[in-house]
Length: 368
Image (cartoon, rainbow, N blue to C red; front, side, top):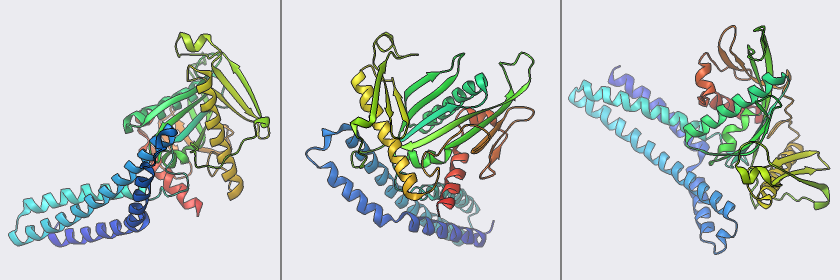
């Protein structure tokens, strides 16, 4: 490309960057950073360790955002200078270097553009994800386990801390239901569009005749509550049961009545927790998850928009968001956005960023 063509390209990238900055509002972010810094100076900060950690994570994320904006400003300025020098000196190698830097910067701005979509009320929160097997018997339980593995692999690739909170295994293997928490700023905003029914089509390993089967799993995503949220629960509305934990977790976990099941009678919401050794720890965590679910329910009722947060996931033909076909061909397709790929192995190993990006954009369009 000529220097003139590159100038035009740079101008387009600068326009995109300006648009992204308007959406993010750097001055607003600076104000938020100052507010968070003031909160970290509070004497009673560590009275609630969970809230304190969340506060510092939010502060770090917003500081990083401002740093990235400044970094991109500098990069665009440097590219402009490189183009000027390339023209003055007739240096083709410098022009090629500018093209390379421009491509890299454009990709980073596009990534920042996705971040600008995460401005919802709860987008900045940690995410709590629940996967339930649906129609399809053993295949569905196996499918739920495959989805759990996919999301945990994605967390690992992104460097996000993911902790399994509860696991209920199927009668003949696989997963009946599993709940895990993703501890990373904006993990709820990133994963929220994953809520819905995920459909699998494959040759069933449980069918001795080698026939093709269709099975389903439902994914629920909710934001984790924080101490500032007003979610009041009447103790009289709760039924609390304790039982022995099942599955992996060590001898101490599996031989004591440390697992807790809390049922919120008015709504019918049930939360099981068995990840911690202590019954007290499991109860506290279960209460936090229950509060998160009630917060999601409250948000649904206030907005009158079904599925705005966790959704009503039936895990069957209805409410499908994505189809994963292993046979007779290989394809993963998002039924809302049209995003698709034949790299099903990569997807099942956690390479789902493109689906998450398109899902975030779809969700933002449908919130308007």
